[in-house]
Image: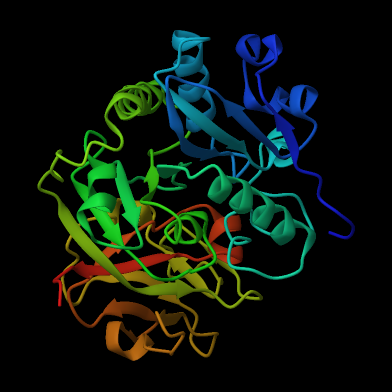
Length: 337
């Protein structure tokens, strides 16, 4: 997109926010990306971002419920960034021609990147105490948290939400990584959008965090930490489906329940897809963008087969996400040092 992306700034939420029944209607209230500063008893604000992807709605509903509960008596100040309001109006991740709003935080001179810098600058000036970026997954996953550092102050942010934590360094342009340079920071993955249980789980977490964030006496609960080691990329021009049909004529035909692989140990020798002979290759890239496909997958008799045990995350059956972002990630248990 060209031109400037205007960041709206509010110091109070309009009444229409509380009666808004779906984030697709937020554009009528906010008009665009909006940073809301709300004063509470504790002055150091908690930073929360939601709707960086317009079709990930759990954060909106949980925040609306939380803010209805507290109205003018917040126990802690909040900075809330409502991201891609325009995409939310259409129920899509981002609009055609827009960058992904969770890939604009690493610098650059695009209008969206400049807007992200404005958010970061204000948050730094306000000395935010912690940052929470709220997302949904496009495939079946348990609730999990993602951090860019494994120190106790970062891991504490997962307390009460999940005992599954992913440590990652790529992609580095994400919200949580930018805020990690300012304060403890976490990305929360709240399962599929539109599920009431996901909203309730996140609401309870945020309600507790408002009261406990900054308590340095609290310990990080025991958690299972994984490290993202690679991501799966499809050639943009390839054809694919999730029918697991050897005769489909597609370049790739992945397992029907491809997202059911997530957070499971998948044995060596597992067939994850059929591939057209002579067609394009699935690419697996490590955290340095080196091609490491042959370390993880073999291609034999029109099949894509695991060459070692793998632990996937964010494997998706959403074709748009698979093509534009990634098909998913590979992890291994994290060992410090």
